[in-house]
Length: 385
Image 1 (cartoon, rainbow, N blue to C red):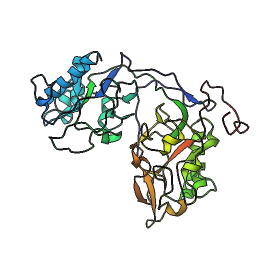
Image 2 (image 1 turned 60 degrees about the vertical axis):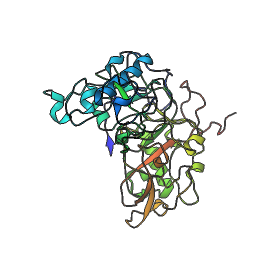
Image 3 (image 1 turned 135 degrees about the vertical axis):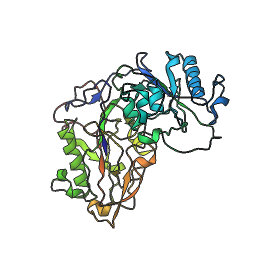
Image 4 (image 1 turned 180 degrees about the vertical axis):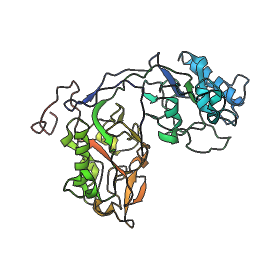
């Protein structure tokens, strides 16, 4: 399922086929933009017991904790910070809009407010657009940085660690468990600055299909892995992306591991300007930097993608008979685009009659990023000096 979002982020010119994806680097959050962070400190579900609770309890304690931490970090407008927390009478959606009450009651307004946000993390990377998108689980990066921009592991109260609904509804820890809070500057803010990564593009296909890849409209006369690569190249060409002939599907079959099929060194960047892997080793060696969940038309997807691949890019047991079967009795390994842990590529075996996406990457290495690379690249050296 693709989720269309009206992202409040300045465009970065990704549709120019003749140039590599490259935008200016910005360090740290813009003081004009609204900020979110995960607390560096932890505590139990009794928020009144936290050091920064200020004598408050419940939601008021959560807000006091966020405000105290934001103040010490000099984030500005610290009194506007709210914890992403709900209770039986108040929804986090309403609270981030500076209101109280339930979404079901329009936060006490004649019309449900929708202007809160967007937000960036404390490293300047965009986190989420409108409050409606945030509540629907559409976020751009992972909530894993504290008020100073340092990485923090683990989850938060009422918040997971990946994109989609999982960022806010990841698990149900015991109230005695030590966890963190997610803190947001409430109300409406300005549009986010452009994303900052430099690299070659990677995307998830808008199109979906069964495990018989020859049946996809853009497969041409191809079958198996060749069909998958042709689907990616056609999608890249139709979207006006850089060097469409150099795209390959992140897909393995018996005797053809995707880690070997893709030889470029990256780095790879989503079409919203967010880096997902800094190198070939990073793409095949562990956690992605951010989820691989943006399509060629800049939609955010949470549904599954065919992979046939382990986290290291090695073929798994089930590949829909070499990606030539749509039979309900056959299985194929799939990945979860919204997840940056191993599940992004090794999420589980699915029946081959299911309709799923494909991951596509430009199989090139970023050598320079000033836009002079253009035209027919087939005459270029296949290696760097």
